[in-house]
Length: 316
Image (spheres, rainbow, N blue to C red):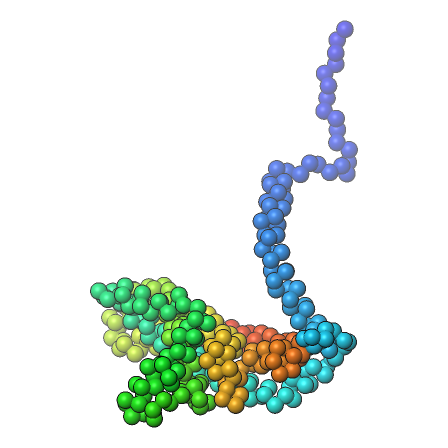
């Protein structure tokens, strides 16, 4: 008896074929990507998205620190925040502090980066000495400078007295201008090395051939700096400026430790005012959340403007 050879069964019209191996690998890779990203996504959701939603919800609620949520209070929270006697002074002081700190810090960091960029025998020592303050926490640095500024035990008061710039046992933190500039000195000392490192990376990314061609064409040092260094350093300057502005607008630790917002509320920042609303004067979490939402919206707008301005092409 003969057995007829089997023929492959014809695939019916409209029946989908099996996915090709490349498509299966791509689908498998997509699932692996989601699995690898899920822990980070979970942390971002728990530590950022959920608190953000909670703050927005609290900003429209009558929520006191000890009494809890007792109903809706929108838009009364925002109206009370804007009409508070310390709101506009704190906004003005925060903006003034941000402009002063950013201008001094970026200019000094750029100068230090250009100084340590050159190949000299002291380059390693200078880089290390400029970066050492960045290893100290901001709260610890604030406590250190608080001791330095102390009229009883600190060396600043005797030094000013010896130079004839102040009387004996002067309190440099006792006046609005003294408190402001004392804090600016602290921040510049603490963060100059960090921004120097960011700008140094940008400087080292500029090809040396560009500088050599400019020197051959007879360009002067200030022309090289203005027409080559600054334009090619624009991305690093943009990132450094955004970080500096954002950090200055959210200043809290240094003023909380050095000045407590004084004297007479002259060094009160907006973040300090949020803390005051929540835990000191008002003990009103709804008002604190409302001010937090205002600060968040202002930060988003300021960062968008900075990105569009600083990342714009020089030809535009």
